[in-house]
Structure formats: structure tokens, C-alpha cells
Length: 316
Ligand code: SF4
Image (cartoon, rainbow, N blue to C red; front, side, top):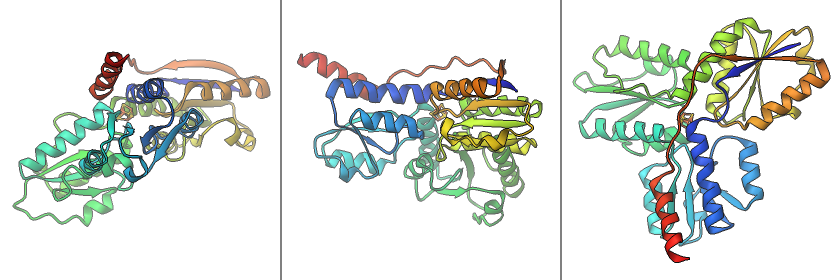
């Protein structure tokens, strides 16, 4: 067996920043630390933090008054910030700056009285947060079929935005359908699908045809990880999304010579290495690292965290 190891893969700058935020708040405040929604969509990351005393909540009402709450990388709607203000919570905002960019675009288009078509998965935390910025101006579409059923009065100015972690294949089909139906629709000033999603999908797109099987390390609720499996399957190579070694079915490897391994933007590298070690031991697999795109993005820690740290230094 030969393993092709895709580069880039795994943690992106937004996930690194969000995880560091929680680590620093834990150091500063001690457990329990409250995080609104999963900090990133990965079961192992969430479980590891839970063992350290992080409490993940789905409602701000679950956070005791006056405590500290961290917002996840996927962002929150203004309504959540208002509820936190009402409960006098100290808010640390670990929203990825590339998600905040989409929020700001939605606010700007809504102020200019555009109807905004938001391409994304309606139940995803990121889309729920973006929708909350301008609920009366935003229409969500998930598919080309949704575009067919979309009715917008002809005198409206229209713009589209996208979730950051969409499939490049699906997004381009939906955008083409939108342009066909609304020829004057405006596109976002800069591509909303983020660099990490694009790079990981491009790596699979480039390498999948050389492989018999693609393993994507990531959790079932990770949008960008699921899109990597779809990217492989769209190119005719079978793909599986696995949280870790224990999710692997060895029947998958019958007759398989080359396996591509990649990881979603929220999947820790140690899980990738565990799978490689297992395949080396069990099948004598060799490993060939394949570099498709350079990636050196880094995001500063959020101002809300830096302020909290300064305050703490002032107190000790
Ligand atoms: S996947 Fe993209 S948008 Fe999401 S946290 Fe990473 S860099 Fe930010």
C-alpha cells in the first residue's frame, strides 16, 4: 500500500486562533470556561477541552451571569451578543476573521437595501450567525433547485454571499444558476469561500485521480471535511470521513494500492499520524508527502482576549 499525504491539510489559521483563545481563557480564569457552540466542529477537540473543564452550551441562558463566554470560530448573530450583554457576560470572540468578513459584507449590503442571497447550509452555525446580521434582507439557498424556486422582485438590487466552507463544485453551479436567473446580481468584493477550504479541496481535486481511496480525517458535523469527501467522489474516487482510527473499516482496503489521506480544517494532526502508523504496521504502507499549495496564514488573537489578558495582568 502507498499513502499519498495531502498538503495542505488539517488545522487552518482560524481554528488555531480559536483553540488558542480557549486555552488562554482556561489559563486565565480556570475551569469552568463556557463556550457557545463547539469551538470548532471536531469531536476530539471538543472532548479534550471538556476534560479540561470547558462547558459547551447551545444557549446563552446556560451560562451563569457574570461568567466568561467564548464564541466559536463560526461566529454568532447580534442577538447572541445582546443576550450576553443582558447577562453581563465577559465575551471573548473567537470568530474567524474570514467569517466576520462575510458578516460585514451582509451588513453593508443590507444598509444599501440589497436583497442578499446567502449560499450555504441553513442549519450550520456560521449561516445562522450571518443570517442574524440582516434577517429581513437575506434569503438562503442551498442548491440549484433552491435558486429555481427563488422569487425576488425585479426592481430589487441583488448580491450573493457564501458560507466560507462550501464545496467549490456546488458553489460554482449555484452561482452560475443565480447569474442565469438574475444577470445583474453582484458578487462579493472578495471570494467568501476561505483559503483553507479552497486549498484542501484543490489538493484532493489534484491528487484523487492517482488514488483508489481517499480518507478524510474529520468529524461528521464538519462542513469543510464533508466537502473533501464529496470532492473525491465527484472525481470518481471513493472517500470516507473518519474521526480517528477506530472509525476505519478494514474491508475498505480490499484491493486498494494507493490511499490519499487528508484532514479537514478542524482535525488535529495527531489523529492523521495515528492512522498513518496503523496503516504502516498493518499493511506495510509507504508514505509520500504531496505538496499542492503553499499556506502560511496566521490570525492575531482577538482584541476581546487581549483586553481580558491586560486586565488580568493589571490585577496581579
Ligand atoms: S475553515 Fe476558513 S473560515 Fe473556517 S475557521 Fe478556517 S480559515 Fe476560518
